[in-house]
Image (cartoon, rainbow, N blue to C red; front, side, top):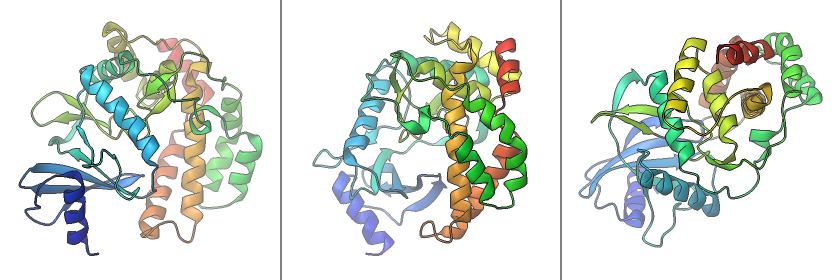
Length: 306
């Protein structure tokens, strides 16, 4: 089936209307590609998943999205098939299309207010926090990763003492678990062309502690911006506080697992239909992350500033 036939099949399954032309490639993330499809029924964001997903998990994240929309968080409306499924063939999902302001980054205060809104939804967690967001890599894992080679290995070896020290700060999740977005950042919180901000990329959402998510958002910002985001979050009624190193548990775990993921992808001879693109993206991410890794000193500095 060629690309046009595929998009016609997607349009039929989701009841989008008749396509008015070929789908236009719009964006690429780690988990999928976004295509803009215009039909006689409107404009749609068709997401092609690079890693097949399960319908049950997709339904859970769609339920959280609908709960967040009802609570006032702006996001592209997820679309279900005529049978009520979120996914088509485990590979496709659809959202309404939203125009963004290109090249404009939301402010730290806006990021804080949006996060407060997300945390006020109070959507029940579907289960425990999965290891990616809760468990550290551990010394043996770090040493194995450094020994695997790659042009990033020297930078990784220099960072090893801090990475091992960070792992010791990770605390097990408490009972304060709810459904969180788990990927809030200035790439996924964008300014809409018709005003205001909108939250994108919900496929990673799931159980987490709001304080952990908030700490992970703050540590990605310059300290001054982090203070502004935290103040805006609290003023907007955000329920979480960031007060101790253990609050950065999710940020530590995610950094570790992302470094593992990118290193393995960069070294893999074949990763997907476009391995060279994946390897290049992985190498770029490794350079960026190891150029400014999360460290115990950065956590201390941020806690002092907060």
